[in-house]
Image (tube, rainbow, N blue to C red; front, side, top):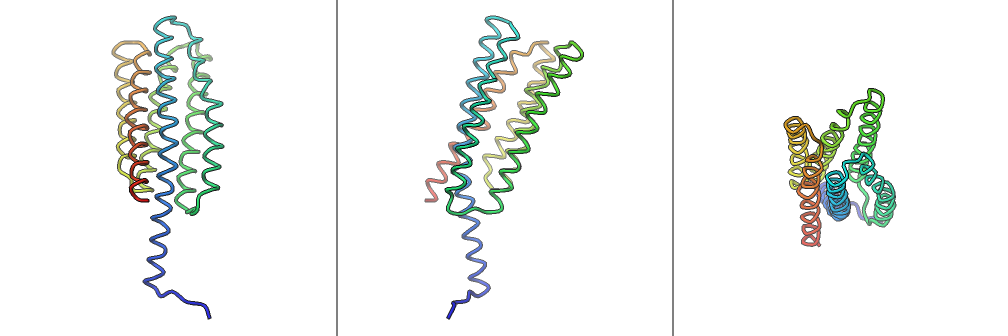
Length: 206
C-alpha cells in the first residue's frame, strides 16, 4: 500500500527541493561567474595596454579569444546541468535569462560595428562597453531575484553604475581607453566577488 503525504508534508518536500535546486544553481553560477569574470577582466586589461602602446584598431581583435572560450564554458555548463541531481524550473529560467543576455550582447556588438562602418564614424564603438555592462547588469539582477542571492543584485548595480561611468568618462575625455579599465573593475566587483561568495555559501550549505 502506497504511503500518501499530507498537505504539510507535501509543502515541506517541495520547499526542500526548491532549496536544494537553489544550492545546486549557486555552485554552478559561482563557477561560471568566476570563469567569465577573470577571463574578460584579463582581456579588457590586455586590450587597454595594447591600445595605449600601439593605438591601432587591430588590437580589438583580442576579443576574438572570447569565442572559443564561450563554447568551452557552454559545454562545461551543459555537462554540469546534466549531472545535477535536481533540476528545477528556476534553473531553466535562469539559463534562459543568460541566453537572452548573450544574444543581446552579440546584437549590441553587431549593431554598433555596423553603424560605425556604415557611417564611417568611431562614435558607435564607444557605446559597446556601456551597453554590454547594462545588459550584463540586468541579467545579474534578475538572477539575484530568482535565486534570492543579494550579492548578484549588488553585482548588477555595479554593472549599471559602470555603464554610466563609461559614458561620463568618454564624454569628458573624448577617448575610449578608460572604458576597458572600468569594465575590468566591473568584472572583478560584479562577477568575481559574487562568484566567490556563491561558492563559499554553497560549501557552507553542504
